[in-house]
Image 1 (spheres, rainbow, N blue to C red):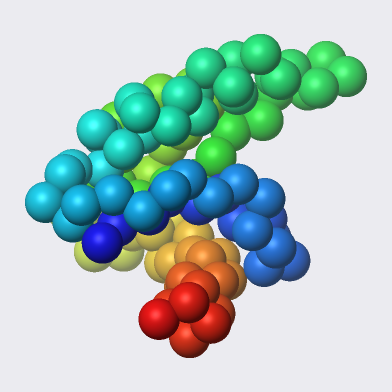
Image 2: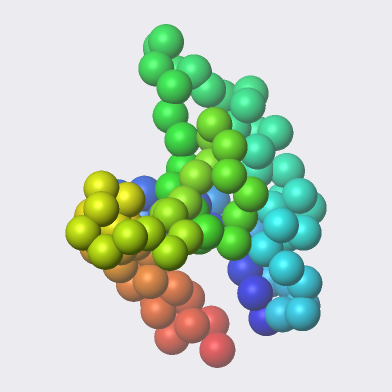
Length: 103
C-alpha cells in the first residue's frame, strides 16, 4: 500500500490521500488526489507563492519540486539535497506514526 501526505515542518499531517495499491506510481496518486489543483486554488497566500518539497519521483513544477538527481559531489545541488534531506526526516516520522497506529 502507498499513501500520499503533506506534512508541515512541525510534523503535522496537513493532508492525507487514501491508500492505493502499491503497484501504482507516485504520479498516478498525485493526479488522483487533485493536490496540485487544490494548491493552484490556494496559492498565492497574501501575495506569497509557496511550494511543496516532495519526493523526486513526483513531477517537478512551480508548486511541487524535489531534490536534484545525481548532483556533482560538493556542488550547490548536492548541498541543497543534503540540507533538504534533514527536513524530510520529519515526513518519515509521520509515516512511522501512521504505520504504527494503523497496521
